Length: 421
Image 1 (cartoon, rainbow, N blue to C red):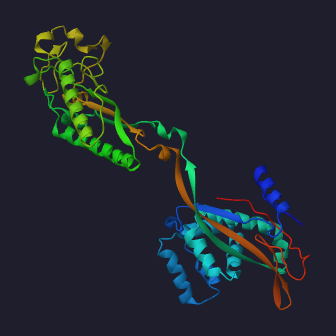
Image 2: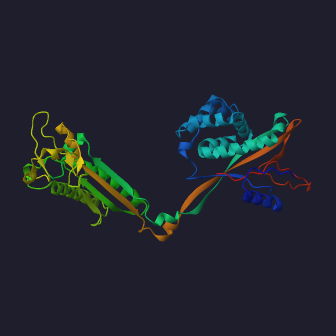
Image 3: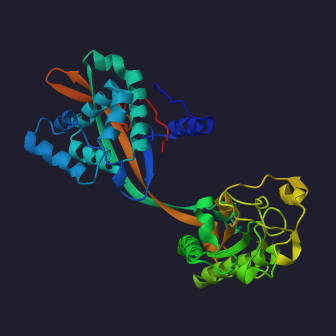
């Protein structure tokens, strides 16, 4: 008895050899393709070419071919999947379709091949078919052997698959970072000399809340919750002197009030959709200069001739007359802008929020495994030897010993398949 073992790992090879040695009625096990998610995978439906349809219908005429192709297009099939296999396998693919057409179950074969298998599963079968041809091709080329291919649909099976062990610990946080620190938006972030949340910022904060709610809804569908593990609000003012409502408060005080108001809007919004924000999480920050501001000191005057005073903390009580300090910020030389509009970029807000999915509420059994339902598909290859006016079964992937009048009949095994997914 000749055995042809595919290139598989040693454990699988030993298992198959052991199976051969013990077999009495069944010579070897079937090639199996497993696919999950039920019997149809709509985005894997493959539209056949007219030539394939004609072959599988045995030349059954245009109405039969149109009905066959229509069945695949109704499932939003893809012609690209067919082209991919044709370009990759060429004549091997053509001979495979011919083998399917030789089976008495060719209509069922077509339904499985085009409607139910994924592309990965088709490739497994074609590789198996190619390996078979490598062993039997000479006999097929000489016209002394025909091959028929039957695809068999197995029963649904379910198995419990262990979930990753770290599922019960918090996954990496989801980071929501929004920066409003450009010239174009600076005029909208805060009103001059005021700390209230503007309508523009209220709209932007609402977008953050909506995004967070989407995350929460997904978590809830898996029995989890969401908590805020980090919240940083950086509010900044420019180094123009405070006037109006803020003329008697410093840059630090103004930026702190601005950050506090944005933080309150964030906390209220997150808690409103059901996301917990611990009281010790929010952190308020000022501008990059360390005194509630960012950017350089104002110019002595702008292009329109407007004069700007120099102050050390933003109030009218600390105005400096030494113009040598105009270019000095925190002991660093920073040239003032000549265009006053350039200072809008320093009236900014940066929001940094981290949301953590918490799995603590999951039941123990859900934490340990999930159930996956799958279905097996098997390819059976049988060769037929031509004799005058008839063909007789010769061998194949799925062959049983014959028990009849001649108890010594032996059917030779050409190939032993491995399992594929």
